[in-house]
Length: 260
Image (cartoon, rainbow, N blue to C red; front, side, top):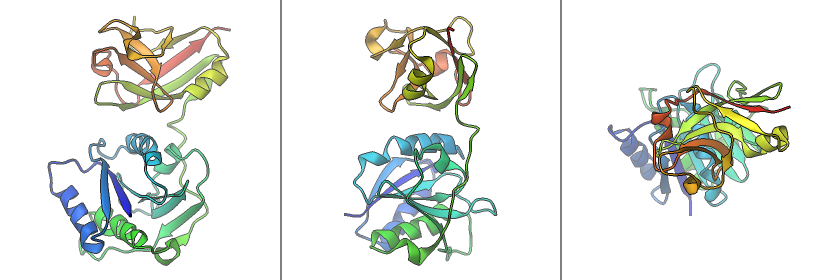
């Protein structure tokens, strides 16, 4: 079974997703296509990284994942194929991999596949899907690419440690309105060392001093902090939309101040 997953910012209003899938089926009719999401905010590689990070490991090893967000090739952002934990990821080297790979990948290849379309405006279909079909048919990375040594790094999206404070940010707002941050439980525990703490958002009077185990540990409409299934700190609201009611947006700072 050859699984090809799609994570894009194409949306569902236009013909783009249909054309992308049609192109894959035309090249490889036996493909099993799975939509992870087409509702990534436009050009938001941080959001795309969060989504694929929390989805890919649920798929069988050998799955192929197309990341069609900010996928245009530039002088600083070539198209690549990355093998990581026995999965293959196809994307532009725009920094997205540094946002979700937890260890160095086993292989990195710059794609030499070229679009046959006279209009180079749809690389997700004309380059990444073409590479995916080659691999799904049993082809090798060596045929469609040349080895690379490293991927582009983006460090600006990582939490910063300042004295007794973790300074993180909101990286994702899910459909329930939960504000997911880039602060992980492992960082919280290793840095906090069981000290008392205060979670501070941009909204005055909305500080939080307790991590809950479940959303229903507080009354309906009350705010809470919780580590989600992905291990990231969430600012949430039981039966409510925390992001909207607390005015939280992507890239807003979230601070955790620990007592000395």
